[in-house]
Amino acid sequence: MKKLFQLFTLFLSISLLANPMHDNKRIVVIDPGHGGVDSGVKNDEILEKEIVLEIAQLIKARNPYQDIEFVIIRTGDEQISNENRTKIINSYQPDLVLSLHIHSNVKSTVKGLEAHISPMNRCHEDSEMYAQRINQKLMELGFENLGIKENNTKILRDPQSPTVMLHIGHLSNDEDKEYLSNSENYIKIADKILEGLE
Image (cartoon, rainbow, N blue to C red; front, side, top):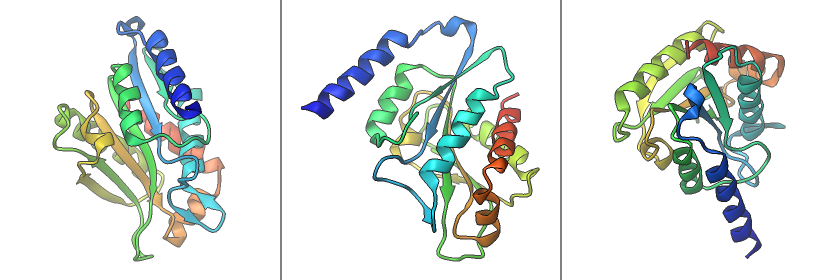
């Protein structure tokens, strides 16, 4: 009952705050993956859920654009289902959705960036355009680009807006892990993602 009340309160707050006119600004929703008991990928004490949340907060804090407003779905260490994430996203009627993740692979030699998009998303072509732009910018930090992959997970398929899932490096790879272990690099990552939105 308590959990249902919390979800009701969350959706009520969103419906009151969401403005379909956006004050003539572009709305970009940032979805930091995982949260709560779902830590995502982890290697030693490094947790995916913590890295992506910090990068999301930096993107919003360092926003140089007067015409873009960033909304972060998860602002703390809470677990939100993909179904509820999608409902929250669509309530904002955003111009773009960025779902932030870190990857892992059974082969420790695999490293670099992946961007995932859904061919079933109604804005598939725009999703692909943003994925290409942002990956190109992140490559300037030294990441290898593993390209754009198609993925029909709910968080990519169901938003009514261009949606890109960014996998920023592999914690299973020693080079990527070392880079992602240094929180000073999160500023660089955030800035490159912002450059990809010009």
